[in-house]
Length: 140
Image (cartoon, rainbow, N blue to C red; front, side):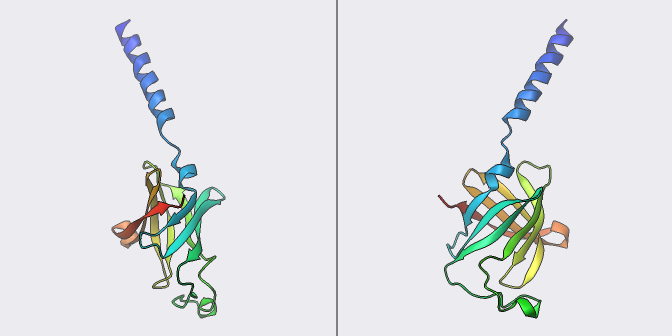
C-alpha cells in the first residue's frame, strides 16, 4: 500500500512539474533590443523553428561585410540574423545559426530566455565550445 501511494505521489509530482515548466518558445517571440540600444530584432516562428529579423538600427547601414558581394549593398534592416533555431532540450534554450553583420560571418548560435524580459543570444565557434554573447531586453 505504501509503495503504491508513494508511486502515485511521485507520478503526480512529475506531472505537476512537467505542466509547470514555462513554454519558452512562445515567450521568446517578440521584439528585443541590444544592451547598447543600437539595434532591435523581432523573433517569430518560421516553420517549427524560431527566426529573428533585424527590424531597427539606430544608425541604418548596408550589409557591407557580407561574404556575398551581391548582398553588400542591401540594407541590414530586414535581414534575418537569427536562423533556424530549434529547441535543444535544455530549459528554454534554442540552437541554430546567428549572422553577425559586423564581420559578415554566420556562427552556431543559441538563444535562451533567462527571464520574462531577458534573452541571451550567443554566437559560437568550434561546435559551441567557445561562445560570445550578450543579453537582449524585451521591447515593451
